[in-house]
Image (cartoon, rainbow, N blue to C red):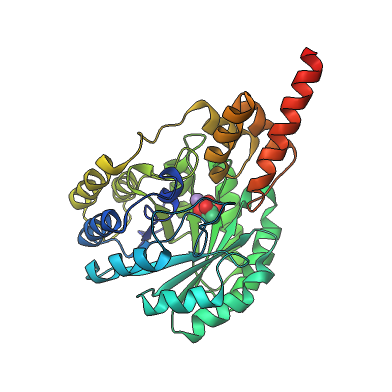
Length: 341
Ligand SMILES: C[C@H](O)CC(=O)C(=O)O
Ligand SMILES: [Mn+2]
């Protein structure tokens, strides 16, 4: 039951999380077209970066079609109302990258760490504040720990100056009940707003986002057509319709956000569906952006991607260990040969 009619802020990350599904190959011109349509619809914040944040382009994470600066400079001039955001993973994106981003028009930094490692965000958050940007803390893989741990790490981010802290379901592994418990507890421990970022691997992205809002989250993420890592994210156009339906004020025009989704659609490499491997991401609790890396490893070593994902889940590997996927697949292929022997 809704206690009040909340005003919900939508941050759209089609042009960042969606980069994973595009193997980071959006062109700057495509980004500008999608961003203009999102802006026209009234979306408050539009995130633009490599899928793994500023400076993510590498052998480890995958090379993008253009540099962060080219993407940001293509999008910034088309925004009339929306704020431009960039994701930063400390250890990948540096302070220098953040300075470049501010010059290119970034007004919001989302600083992402593994859910137990908020302490590495202090320097980046401090710099973002110093440069006058809004700061969002992003606690990835929040399904791996209990609510007390998330709240402890969220409080650290709050103490570093975060304006919002997100509970992030990177693996699309959380259930609505779990989302409610975690978000309401974190919210009760903070003075700042709480956000929620969903993945759709178990088909729960919209349901989980609604559960987060019911539990007190006032900032939520979406991507057009759900474009994103794994089975993708909460589709922004569906989220707008669903939030309006339960009585939330979102400040986004429903027809125009649907129109934005049709601008994106022809650019997509394939429809964003919950395929069998994506289900395994959610089931085994594996980082959604490992999906395409796992497909490549499965093809290379003649394995079923579902088996690799189960093994990655068993080994509890975290973001940043993308190269380890190849090691695991190699090991599994060797064992298979021995057994077949
Ligand atoms: C770097 C990741 O893609 C960040 C994210 O969107 C998530 O953890 O989910
Ligand atoms: Mn994500």
